[in-house]
Amino acid sequence: MNDYERIARVIRYLDEHHTRQPGLDELAHVAGLSQSHFHRMFSAWVGVTPKDFLQCLTLEHAKALLRQGESVLSAALEAGLSGPGRLHDLCVSLEAMSPGEMKIGGSGLNIRFGVAATPFGDCLIGESERGICHLAFVADEGRDAAIDELHRKWPEARLTRSNRLAAGLLSRIFERPGDNNRRPTFRALVKGTAFQVKVWRALLRVPPGCLVTYGQLAAAIGEPRAARAVGSAVGQNPVAYLIPCHRVIRETGIIGDYRWGRVRKRAMVGWEVSRRMEPAPSAEVIAANPDLHI
Image 1 (cartoon, helix red, strand yellow):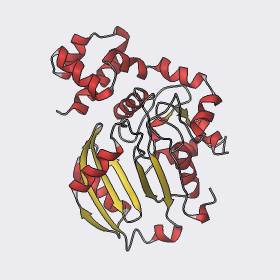
Image 2 (cartoon, rainbow, N blue to C red):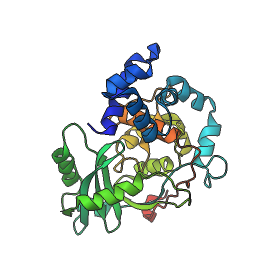
Image 3 (cartoon, rainbow, N blue to C red):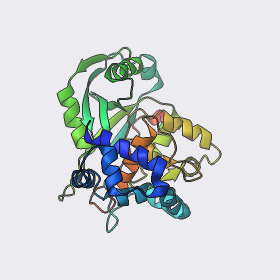
Image 4 (cartoon, rainbow, N blue to C red):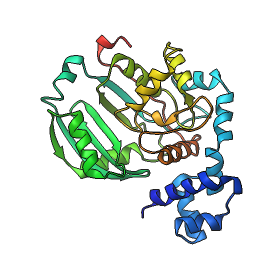
């Protein structure tokens, strides 16, 4: 059992028993570790103690963010988020395929892909000459099912496997920010409708440690009545974590479901909250397809 699996088990346990405020000894037992080992491992992985991490993930925490209303969303969608509240984020340039390119299923595209470990479990990532075109956490069905999904999404592309390449890309995506404020930059190639890409573009501007609702996201793209459609677009995100759909919650303040698992979503939100004061850049988005009119 790796560190993520241990932490995921503890988070599930806290979901069920948080009202009892279980102590360190109880959580260490759940993780199958000594108290000292568990505390060191958890604190090193998350950056805060188990107790602080739980507080970050409570419903009251989510509601506190939402109570700030439009000011939170406005700050999330503003460019140049730096200074005392500097946040750890990635700089992502988003390129959308044209409808004609989508119809041919990636014909003529060379995609190198592989599976490697991340702080949140194994990921399958695919990269073409035009950028990262697939990023998904490996679900309970296993690696073969994850690879089958990649084949279905890019049926005509030429696929070459390289787990070494995957490990290098994923280590950069999930690395801790350094003291030199270096900006990790990535280009992503996505297939989607104009509306979907518009939603994904807005998601890229929501900083780590901040949460938005589907309704707020709909209002941000100028479609205040389209919260349901926004939710569908969020669920179709083709590149996990790079496009941060894990930062979207329900109107009630509940963290809610996630395509790659509710526990994983809560873990990522807490991981980002714990790093809100660490130096890093905000995200930048470029829609390369002029036909999308974003």
